[in-house]
Image (tube, rainbow, N blue to C red; front, side, top):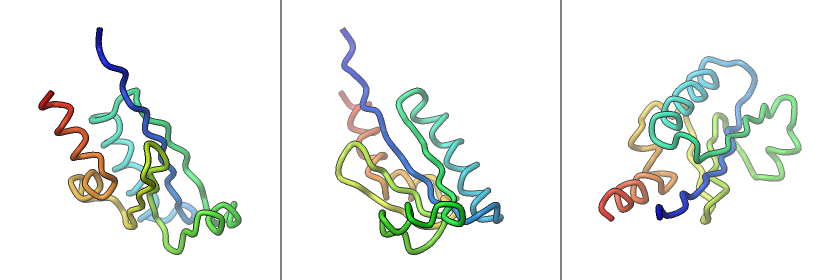
Length: 102
């Protein structure tokens, strides 16, 4: 019997359709489809349309990626172009490597 996979709940905060926002979303989707296919939920939040959501989650810059689940909450700011930095920053690379070692 295979162990249950964790589901990652992520929020990507962007400011409109800027080049950094578009690049961050494209890069993130690439990472998620390649490494976490089927075990994630991603919500994209445009802070220009929903500033209250950014305020509630204390988002000060965009793009910002927030890993909500599993705990602890982790945030990374920037266009997410460095795959390894994104995975390490969100504590995903360590978990991915330890699962492969099992």
